[in-house]
Length: 252
Ligand SMILES: Nc1nc2c(ncn2[C@@H]2O[C@H](COP(=O)(O)OP(=O)(O)OP(=O)(O)O)[C@@H](O)[C@H]2O)c(=O)[nH]1
Ligand SMILES: [Mg+2]
Image (cartoon, rainbow, N blue to C red):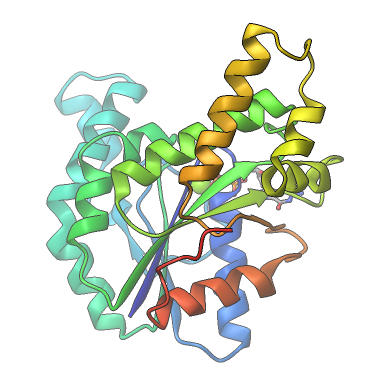
């Protein structure tokens, strides 16, 4: 069983990518399932085989503990960890080869509280990986892109699993190609930075970017559209390599 967790900022396209990857695997006659770990989601674009909403009732939490929607979501996110044995049993009984796990909308609810890393480390599987979705609509400037890379790095540190950075929604972004180029070539990132060369901010951004690039153990950015499926061959190929035990990435 090979597990992939989809993480990323709110609205980055996690659920749609879960749906698209699921149907991609099904069309290739692979035994794949989707797992929903978002206790607060109302509608999903796929049919989850395992759904944390059957284990956690957000309305009940709001009433029982007199919490508002945000407090209840935080409470519910912490509860996910306690449901790990149940989640594991349900996943195991599906006998799936590929398990795509959709995580809560706000990345901090999952990755920065106990539940996400606990589930990521505790779930038994032959291979595990994390996708971090960088929304190309949010990464529109070099500094926005850099801040999302830092967030991806924080999630990577918390989850302690191989991570692929995915540039999402490439079909609606005007500068997806440029963003992908920033990721490959620090010189192009630096060229696109506004501000005077040699200024304090410029030096700060370029040094942080170069440090991230230098320290990176992830194999670059995967531009993908959950809508048109552009980029799926490369992404699914890399996931297969991880599944086959090749998670030690070459630095690029
Ligand atoms: N055009 C386009 N729209 C997308 C793509 N991915 C997601 N969307 C749209 O963006 C919105 C958010 O997508 P979701 O898949 O719900 O994103 P999410 O990360 O699961 O959102 P939360 O769970 O609420 O944080 C929806 O309206 C999707 O239809 C994409 O690749 N292309
Ligand atoms: Mg979602």
